[in-house]
Length: 215
Image 1 (cartoon, rainbow, N blue to C red):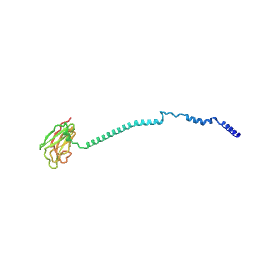
Image 2: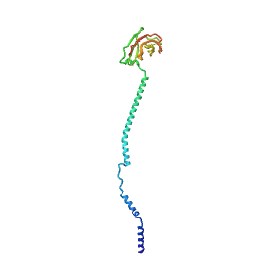
Image 3: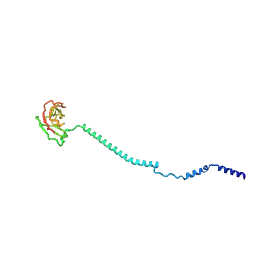
Image 4: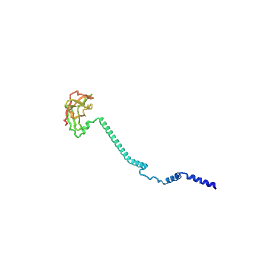
């Protein structure tokens, strides 16, 4: 009994020598963790802000993408129209103009000015100021001999220069050929030339027709 009592007294002395703070440290830390409240939700939470930002970005980027696609389609349509207009213009520029048909169809075509040919038949000139063009037509003139064809010329009023037109069909005394630059033309003549035509008249005119002045 004496030994056990002595042991209890020694244990009591060792416990009394401990730091009071250390004795209560464990209890204090556990109590503190249990008592601390959880953080309150905040409207400024980064994750929530990120979600809202993504929603705003998607909502604003979709209309922009639609606008960009509409703009691209419009530009494509304009580009195609420009290309087609260029193709049409090039085709018209390369296609030979039917001057005779244009003048015949013109609403301002002047009445024919005709001259009789002594050998038979006649030649006439029709002009259109709006088309700035005209044509000379022969009808019923004698059929040229072999190797020869009628050819028309336009004579400039200021210089008297003769410019050749396409020859009429060989072996015939009828047909029409057109000319342009009406304002510079004073007279139209017809001669008899070698088949294929020439650059200068080789004979005197068979007929000469004065072209009415055009303002």
